[in-house]
Image 1: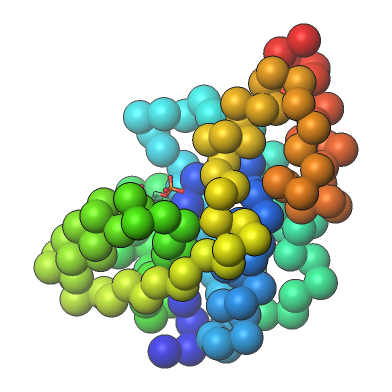
Image 2: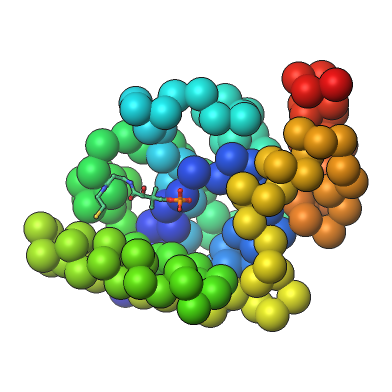
Length: 162
Ligand code: PNS
């Protein structure tokens, strides 16, 4: 497997995402980071252009990462984006159930395989959901989002929620 698609909402990118991306970049020839555009839920905390920009800044030093958006079925995006399999990070034991279900369903409908990376212990407690909660309430995001984009992320929350 040379090209892997790492899909997600990335609303916003966290240090946990970057941990998975950096480690995957040493295993795969190319990592395509795929940001889901969800028609049912178009308004997250960050717009699609913002999510893409935050990811691109955060991965700027890595030569074999590309950041793209996708909509529709993940398994179609795998083919459309030229990838061969899906990558997901596992943070907690609770992640495993829904992730196994998704991996098995995706294989059932398309034959596309999913590979998992265990989140590093240093980042496993960081989720985008908690980052949004802390950000909206005006908390400091140091060590939770990549330092290169922390100012941008904090000021967005500051503008919208204070
Ligand atoms: O970061 P997230 O929100 O946990 O990522 C979830 C994601 C994007 C991987 C998942 O919602 C997804 O693959 N959506 C695309 C629609 C799809 O293919 N659904 C069927 C999955 S079995």
